[in-house]
Length: 142
Image 1 (cartoon, rainbow, N blue to C red):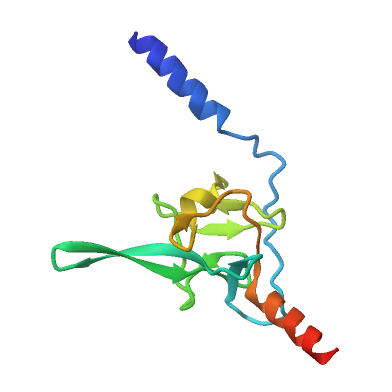
Image 2 (cartoon, rainbow, N blue to C red):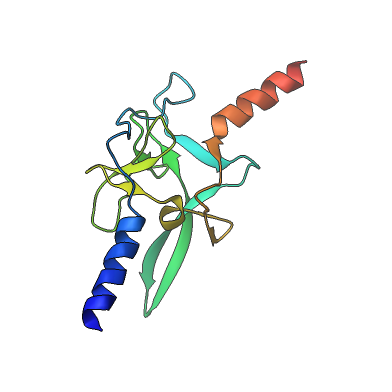
């Protein structure tokens, strides 16, 4: 019975893996020729967040903080401090729209970010808030 459990668990883990040989290490290009950081939002304009846990006395509080990308594709908070995986690796957004760790692991949006307090789905599209602002500005000029 124990061997069957290990076999099933191994199959589940391996089924979730995807080949990394075709994953680009080139960063998502920033929206503007500026230093950034550049805020990430969903296509409907919702803020993409990462929860930060703090200890307040005897309580643990989860604070949602906006997610940004720096000029090099690294995922950061507004103050440019890096958002890291549970094992301490930096997170990058590559040109294919895939989140990868600094050691090349493919990361799930669902495990990293939330929208409105709910885990972000891997199918949720993202963009830079700056792109939305530029589009609105151009629409107002017409």
